[in-house]
Image (cartoon, rainbow, N blue to C red; front, side, top):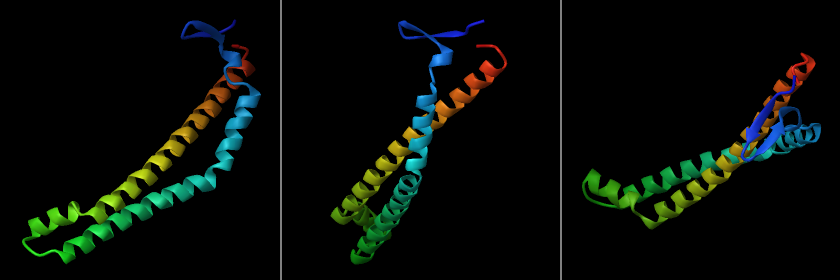
Length: 122
């Protein structure tokens, strides 16, 4: 029995969706990006800490009520720059995290297909 899935206007056999080459590429990419993923996560944490420190420093420089000082600190140019750095690092980390998640899905699909092949379902 052959199992098929319709993808767009094409009919693909499930046993060729994830080839051994695609599996190998996914495993290599995961292995190659382990350190990069950790590095990008650290950059996000560091940028968040820096942004909070910049906001706190701006708060301390200003005078007035607490609400006024918080508002001034939250709208300061230094804080805006720090938040831009934070969001840039967050975007880079999330993009890599999403790519790695797709690679894990490829591996899971290969495992499922391989299991089905071994049971004679494909």
